[in-house]
Every structure is written in structure tokens, then in C-alpha cells.
Amino acid sequence: MLIAQMTDIHIGFDPDAKPEELNRTRFRATLDRVVNGPNPVDLLVLSGDLTDRGDRDSFEKTAALLTGCEFPIYPMVGNHDTREELLHAFPDTPSEGGFVHYAIERDGLRIIFLDTLEPGRHGGAFCAKRHDWLRAELAAHPDTPTLIFMHHPPVVAGIGWMDPGEGEDWMLRFGEAVAGQDQILAIHCGHLHRPIHTRFHGIPLSVTPSVAPLVAMDLRAIDPDQPDGRDLITTEPATYALHRWDGENLVTHYEAVHDWHVLASYTDGLQPMIRDMFAERQ
Image 1 (cartoon, rainbow, N blue to C red):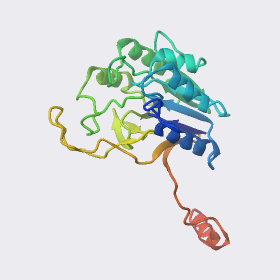
Image 2 (tube, helix red, strand yellow):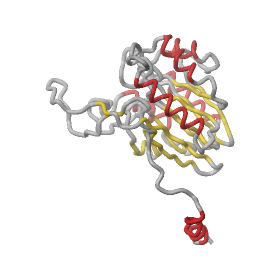
Image 3 (cartoon, one colour):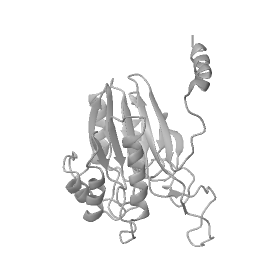
Image 4 (tube, rainbow, N blue to C red):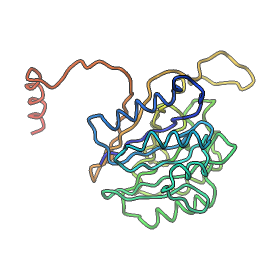
């Protein structure tokens, strides 16, 4: 099973751009790669910040671009989104208790989609109700391999202006929910607009880079009271993830979408090399 993940699309950042806003152009190109590339996906996860302002027009534009997809789509809310407009644009999305969180099971893998939105706040949230919902989900399926998607990473990655504070309550509460849950194979997030890998309570945790422009790679301390002219956002290529589940192992790949050049193709000239590589496996 191949799970595609796109995150931080931010449709509507520049809605009046002509002929089309940059974020929408980047989303079209990424979606085209997922749909028409060599790796047929089984489902697509949109892990938050689908829009930039949470407005109906932006959500409808996002949903319209996805209408031709022949695989299921699972949208999630990020801090730039609104629950109401996401559910209006994607009416089949489950919600419960005022939160857009839900779980599915495919090919022996349980996939949990969390809601870390707190309206008016840039950073994440994970209240007692969401904690209890997640604990119940995990307790109900203790032996089923599980993958968690959430928009906000519950870690400090070193990008000072995007990071949460050390030990924020919501991060501690989420940590309490997942601690000791050995069925969790990985946690995949968005929000930080960069590729990042770490561990959280011993669980592999990764951040998928954004479809919208990426955050600059700058780990220096930043002073909110002293602008220093540093780069904040760059035009690095839109990126998405492919999570490959073979029934036992979960492996993640990232691909940047841009106009690359093919340097080698599988022709007769390279067949001996391919054969040799296969022969080494015996």
C-alpha cells in the first residue's frame, strides 16, 4: 500500500494573483506527479493547512482540484484552516465531538488522523478530550500496527520562529497518550515546511516538507524584538511523501517536484548492472 501525504498547501495566500497564485501552481504540479507518476497511490492524506485563511473559496478551490482523483482523500485541519469550511468542502470527512479526528484501517494498518487546531493560535493543541479519544482508539486496537498523522509536530526542531516552546502542555498531554503504545509505527506531521526526522517517546517522528514554499534552513536563535534580515521563506521545490506499507514494514520516501533531468534510464546498456545487483541478493 502506498500512502501519499501532502501538507501545508496554503491555497488562498495570494488569491488575486494573475494568472494563478504560486501556491495553487505548486499544488497542481505536486498533484499531477502523484496522479500520473510511476507510483500508483492507494490514498492521499492532506495533513493540514490546506488553505491560508480558512475561507470557503479557498477550500472549494482546493477540493475542485482533487475531483478527478480515483483514490480516497483524507483531509485534516491545520492552524490556517477552519473545521467548518473543511467539512463543507469535504463533507464525507468524519468528525466527532467538535474535532476533525478519525481512524481508518487498510491492509492491516490502522491510520489515525488527529486534530491539533486551536483557533487563533499558530501552535498546536491537544486537549483532554482529544487525549481521551486517542487513548481509547489505541486501547481498542493494541495489536494492530498504527500510523498517526497530525499537523503540528510535538517537538522542538530548532527553527526558532516556528517551534513550540519546550514542554508545552499539549505536547506533554500527547506524549502521555502515546507513551508505551508499541503498536505505533510512526508519527508523520507537517507545519514546519521542512524535512525533519526525530523520535518522540521512542516513536519515529517525521515532518513532511510543504507543497507551498519551504521555510529557510536557518537554525540560529531568533530575537522577536530584533529583525536581523535573515531569510524566512524560500522557493525550494514543492515536496510530498510516499509512505510504503508492505504488511510488516513502513518506509517513507520524499520527492521534490520540479523540472529535473533524467540522467539514466533502464535500457539494454544498464541491464547488466541491474542483473548484478539482483544477483548479490542471493
